[in-house]
Length: 420
Image 1 (spheres, one colour):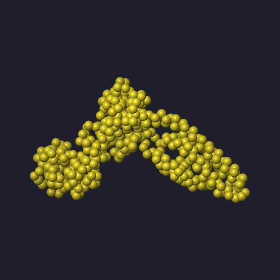
Image 2 (cartoon, one colour):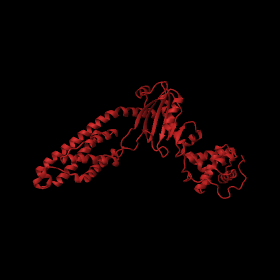
Image 3 (tube, one colour):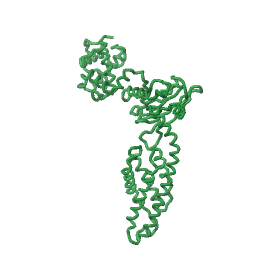
Image 4 (cartoon, one colour):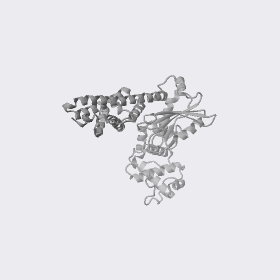
């Protein structure tokens, strides 16, 4: 007779690793829904292990807290996992534990002990499963209203919702206000979406954030995470109030904002404007980009293909240059335009001699066939450089931190751009 049968204690804690792996693999392979949510293997496995450990503790005759079951119910509710899938997971755990007990109680004299053990196993499974289900239902009740508002906001922004007045009241948005849509993109400049935990096992995916600028000026925001970005609808008494709210929203992030509008029917177009605005920021650049503030960049961002063709057609002669040299020339062209075509002011900004700037611009003219003194050629150069900045990979990798120092012989004057 085995020790388990003799003592009536069913201590399988030495098999915790094996059982946890078997159950987690069974859950993940049987239900692809887990990989389609924020509950991939890296999240499911620790939850399974914690639950198995608690169940094995109970089988060994010790007190268990059932905290893992409560946490499992809350997490699965937050991610929309159906109750039947949650219960199936506990049944699978019970089956694997019973199989391990049956393997150990395989002597003919252990038959009675195996039957008693089976009852103990399923009693422990039912206890954990019931706690998880109650936790799931309690959490879902709290999430339900928030999830409904999230889908309503998503429908407004995508143009699916038709009864906009009812939707406005349901979202608690005031009437007769200025509205703005903002898109905050995830990326290195922002370190993720503020106020969200996209990619984590738990956390808000939508929210309500009213903020009072004063007793007379109340700003209300509604937001959600959509396709990896944070979409925010701002409602404010006046455009300045909305802009003030946007400034706070954009701090340390890459955020694009639409033009102000007054009807929710304009929200889908405003979302498109905000998306274009955020793409008008150079990669890695943080800040607030308002639609209309950068019309050329917005035009280039709206059509990546044509913008790429423009950059290649105008700047193709730079492709064979050393990356540092290419960056040197592009930065010089940018400084020239930023300082109104003044070689002196551009040189001061680049910390080099004015003749160095003129020599570099002459080299750009040689490589591109476009002289900055020709208005048409200058326009093409400026547009191409902006397209290049918005799409850094068009001509290959450039090192933004390349040292902008003069190359040998650059200080020798060459005929070229104006002497401003």
